[in-house]
Image (cartoon, rainbow, N blue to C red; front, side, top):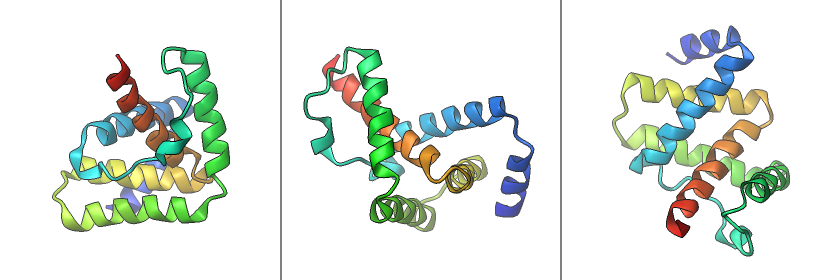
Length: 129
């Protein structure tokens, strides 16, 4: 399944990648089994969640600062691994997780971090609205 998933990914267009990341982000955002994929809370201090431009700038800055944190990235990958070992997922959900891992590796974990950070920011935005 992994080989087929990643082989299909090799033929993705840029639009396919964006669509797939949006699908994965929505899946991760809604799925309770992946609730432990979170970011450190202290980075959220002082952010105006009603200003979309500021939020997007903070997300980009946060991702840039997180890329070098191998321990954090390893923890995210371990959380995904734990979920795969301990919970039942549909074949499509498993493929989505494999796509996330594959895309993350190919772009130095920016995809993985963006999906997790955006998930966390979206959850916090819901609280403030």
